[in-house]
Length: 357
Ligand SMILES: Nc1nc2c(ncn2[C@@H]2O[C@H](COP(=O)(O)OP(=O)(O)O)[C@@H](O)[C@H]2O)c(=O)[nH]1
Ligand SMILES: [Mg+2]
Image (cartoon, rainbow, N blue to C red):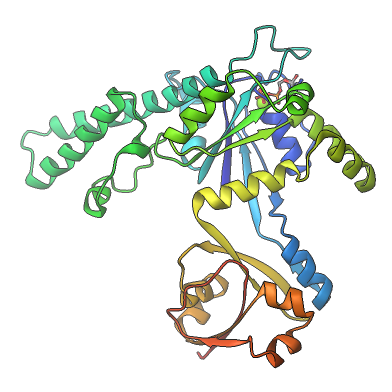
């Protein structure tokens, strides 16, 4: 999964990026405006438990890639803007970092207005999509004779453009699969899943309040935007402490989960992703699939041979082994099942694929 960190300059993107990846890039003004890339494991206490039980040679967590994309005005033109827009386009999910914190050393002499910033960035995504759509519509119309298929395509594009003109993101436009096909895989920005990460200072975190909070909640509910609250600066500093000190400081701030925990969980939920596990002496591993995927599709995630030669899946659930303490006891209790190719894999399932090639 690829997460693009976006938002206005000085919102705390690079600080949050450092927190997520454990890297220590300089924060503040970024004149070169280069994109930073880093990755992190997806924290999963279930995998920690399985690893302590099986003591495998290797424990493999799922990974997320983060791109810290410098703020760009979407109507800015030129090579830099084009490159940054491409970065935004290639993300699976956008996380908009929004400043709520009060003034810091080199930014923020202006009072924070997180709702305004959230909406402004949404508007920039809409403007970028309008530009792309208008160009595409022009290209079709400029042909001497418009074919029937192009007519239908034009109708879809114009409907999308209309939504944008009414300041509605493309995520609000429902398209049939045939209509989707007309878009030929072109990625639009305002249809991407978006998560808002509101960057608070310690006082706001302690008070559990910040400016424009209600407006943000209403806007987020309307457009299906999950909201997480982060305290990037402090959490980054905490990240440098020893594990014991870290827990103490987190507890003081009233935080039970790290920023990475919260973001990973929210992104999985928003994208409809779940985890299943494979276990053994050699390797204990977490795999990411879409909710609703079948056992056979899950097998394909591991290896295409397993998908092609799929026979059956031996399945038990994490909760069972957690409660009973070993795979042998799960089997004794009759909780190990054999499932066919169409079985819908559940979050936390432990699979052993039987296959034949
Ligand atoms: N007080 C406070 N300052 C922050 C916080 N997060 C970032 N900053 C500061 O805001 C400035 C901009 O942060 P940076 O991560 O570079 O923002 P970016 O431009 O969005 O990448 C830096 O001076 C940070 O130290 C925060 O949570 N609280
Ligand atoms: Mg930055």
